Image (cartoon, rainbow, N blue to C red; front, side, top):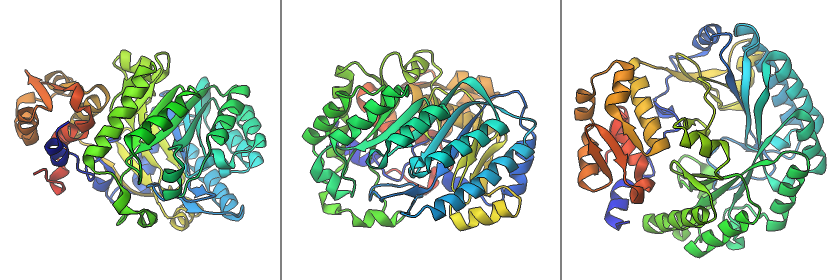
Length: 445
C-alpha cells in the first residue's frame, strides 16, 4: 500500500464505527428518565443481549483504552457487585416482564476478578430476572495470568460457553514494553483447561502497532496462537492516545511503528491467518469456516455492535455496570464511567445513564450503510436508502469524501454500489467516514 494513501487516510482519530452515531456525539440530554421510558417500551417478546462491564484488573496493561482500575482487594469488587445486583433488578423492573436473552457478554477490565461464588450468584440473579434461551451464548473475557482451576469449574457450572483470551503479543520485549508479561505456557494451559470443561469456543485478541513490534514478531506471535487453534481472532491496531488514556504515557512513543509499518504488520498477520484456513471477517476479525462469524458473513448477516463484529441479531443490547453502552429501540444509552457516580445513581433507585443519543431516521439510514461497509466492505446505497424511505441521490452527493476515495483507487462506485478494494480494506474506516454526518471535527486533507 502506498505510503501517501496511508498518511492521508490512516487518521487515528477516525471512529471504529462499532456503533453510529459514535460516543463523542452522545449528549447528557438523554439521561436516566429517558432510559426508563425506553426500557418500558421494549417489546416483551424480542430477544435482547446483555453486556456486563467489570471495571477491575489485577494489573494494568499500559496499552489498554478501556475504563478499568487496579485492585488487589476484594472490597471494591464486592461493593461494585452489590450495586450491579441492584441495577439488574432495577432494569428488570422497568422492562415488560422477563425479557428473553440470547447473548451475554462479560467484559472489562477482567471479569474473572469476581470471586467464583460471587460469579455464580450474579449468574443466578441474571437468570431470575431474564428469560435465558437454552442456546444462549454466554461469553467472558479472561486474563490467563490470574485464572484459577476453581474459576474454570465455576464458568462451566454457570453455563459459560465462549471465552475471549487477551494475548496481544507473545514477544517478551513487546510484553515488557506494555506491562503485560504472559507466557505461551500460561495461555496454552488456560485454553486446554477451558476445553476440558466444555468451554470450546475460544477467541484470541492480538495487537499490532505496539512498541518494538516488527512484522517478524507479529507473525511469530500469530503462529504461536495458531498452534492453540482458537475459533476466531480479533486483530486490533494499538491506538496511542496518551492525552485521553494517562496509562499510555508509560509507553515509549519513539518505539512505536509508523503507519506503513503498522499496515505491513496487519497484512502479515492477515496473510498468516488466511493461509492457516481462517476467513477474514470485516476489518479486523478472523474465524474458522464453521464459526458463527464466518457463517453470518457468508449469509450476509454479520453485525457490528459496541463490542465489534457479531453474529448476534438482537436489536436491543442492555448495558450493565460503569461505562456500559446499551442500544435500545429509540437510541443509545451509556452508564456513568466513574464508579462513584455509578453507585450514586443506582443507590438513588434510578438508571446510571449519564448520556446517550436519540436516533433520527437519517441516523438509522447512515448507520445501516456504515455497518454494511464495515461488515461486508461494500454497500448497495440505493437499496439501503429504499429500505429506509430515502432518495439516494442527495445522500451520495453530500458524501464529499467518496469522490476523493474513488479518485485515489480506494473504492469502486457503480450506480451507487460502493465496494472497497481488497488491497485497501485496511482503510475501510475512512470509507465509512464518508457517511458520518457528524465528522466535521475530523478533516481529511
